[in-house]
Length: 322
Ligand code: NDP
Image: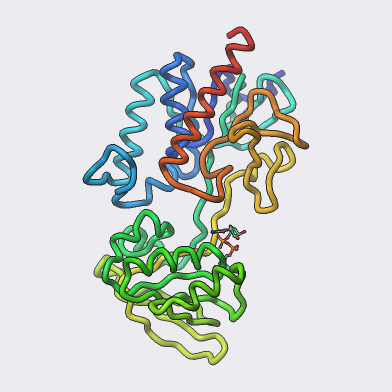
């Protein structure tokens, strides 16, 4: 039953939640199977690739490709085969009914299958100067942008395993890495911490917070204005890059209590793509990309899992006789 205040409702074979690399790959596959998927673009259309600059590790682009262009190409590819992209985001979802009921503002969409591809968002410091310099020396992805730090002095923010991993990875390119942790306690596992501490080109600053990223006018990071909170002392660290390694936030809040999540809110997918509740598969519900991948988080792995989800959608609908 659809409530009276809905302005429209429709039933779709496939709804894909999210328009990043995994969602769009799922859309390409589902569209080529003539399933006319509806892609809800969500809060961050294009996902994390849309805020990256040059992507040099996506196979097939020997000279690299700009992240937004790669996403644009995927959108074109999906729509060419009949996918519909809609600027909308999910207000609420009811997974206890079949088809699933999605509420988008005043509209309702009934989905015979739903692919959750809403990704994970990098955690930022949320300083205006940091936000202004994303893609101009501020990055949340060492694997994507590390190469551009070749021969430069850089900073990595964070004290967990991600920050240690980024610092170790970036030390291959950068002439010097300064790891900046806001306290003198580390969340990183002892082995990762020791490895980073033992590295000759990684220096540690503890009890230190970033107050400002310098270089907004030049549109290029020139340094960081820092504050040592233990001594209440301000100083400037000249660096050309700032990498954030302060964690990610999986965008699965709308599904809390409806699907199994791990302790940090990532979807626990069975056989890589099947969503479960209390360990039992939920028929017709799939997840792909960073929403269920805390480990690899690469464009190509997200694309791969989008493909897998779409193939499972096809199989499921076929079993339902559609
Ligand atoms: P964590 O939550 O473990 O660590 C986040 C770090 O960022 C903490 O040091 C935290 O500081 C700091 N931080 C958070 N917000 C801010 C802020 N606003 N300003 C400054 N610092 C901030 O996240 P990770 O991504 O490091 O790890 C997530 C999970 O993934 C962990 O379980 C980790 O073990 C795992 N992982 C494993 C890897 C491996 O085994 N190779 C690699 C990467 C991750 P504070 O402590 O003060 O809150």
